[in-house]
Length: 586
Image (cartoon, rainbow, N blue to C red):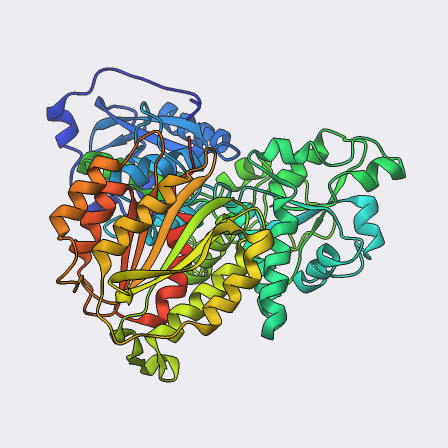
């Protein structure tokens, strides 16, 4: 987290800070409240830490500085606002660690990172990902938008002109066709698991692919993911550097041709007078914009919560719109203030005229579908990483049970279909094997190897054939013997630089009276596991007969995770999410 301007006043005294509590009963009402609280005479100090997306930080810092100069106070206690320009992904990692969430691609928080009192990331996407990532108790206050920047497709102007810009309106479906053609447009993306604009663009592109319907939809989606992955970048500045550095045709043809970025990115890029300016294409349907939610993080002191409420009023005054314009950002309602350098063709709800924003702003996470977002993140993570995996599928008799919500397909059929769909996302750099298990499946042995772990480049057809011919047995669930054998199998030919893992599907508890006990399994796993050669275990439990505690006892030893659902129709999404959350080798 990089520090922005840091303002400190006198030391805070507990007695004077306590006096601030309860003041909002009088001061909750907008501009009037702000005027009442800007008092020239105050004592003590409430220090409010505010982490803000870097592009917005100067506007927030300037507004807070002016407020302090005018006598910022709550109930007679002075307020000092410490604004830090912060990368949203870094704050997200810190908040995730604090609330027990796991976010694909985000990684671990730095040891020195501290959760702020108020967080203003670039998008409500971050708040939603924390909730769906396991931070179920994460319930930030307010959450209203204080700024906005549409997500656009940035193209070098000569490339955009060939596609009819600025007269013609391009759709996401048309962009998908350009990316997937025999002479594809070179499209890039900032890593969407770590960048909100990248994820917003990915959601729109995959939605366009899915809209084609049928078998082609899956092929188009995977094709789009891999096309973007070939030009992905971990940092926005690195991606911007791939746009043409000279106006000649050869340079333009060999450079990046399109990328999902924010409108603010394009304005700032063009302000530096590059040799080839970027066009901002506002594609339909419009992707989720960057909406800069004002999130008061849970657990802060009442006095700080009061100060945060008043700071929000400061950031929703009419004058703040012009501070946003100076940073190439719009107001929450989509309009802009004085001095905003709108790109050619930029839409504005009121033609760019300043209007007073509503005090409530825009509700955070509004319009975002958590399931679609989870699927996009998981699909991207799988399609763009490589690994070595043994897939182990339960074929015990209980897997014959029908699933009413899946047109009475059996649990076995639903599981195999999820595995088949997941297989489409893995590219040929993966190595995958397939086992099935029950009890006494091969003589006294509980498991059967259908396809040994090997490169998908040569084994994809064998896997597809094995999945299509797998049937349930009449046996029980030989979970423990199978798990130990699978672990040893993956560990034996462990490969450095890749995630070596087991993904096991089951709908029951261990029911093998002739096999090892739970304690024997855990003891043996503890004995053979090797921190230098880790094997992650992901277990997907299906139905009400599964014991999550039993499954978690295994993954606590091996690493990985256990996911349980009583609705078998959800296992496809759980499978994708589970694979996406595997930790890459350090």
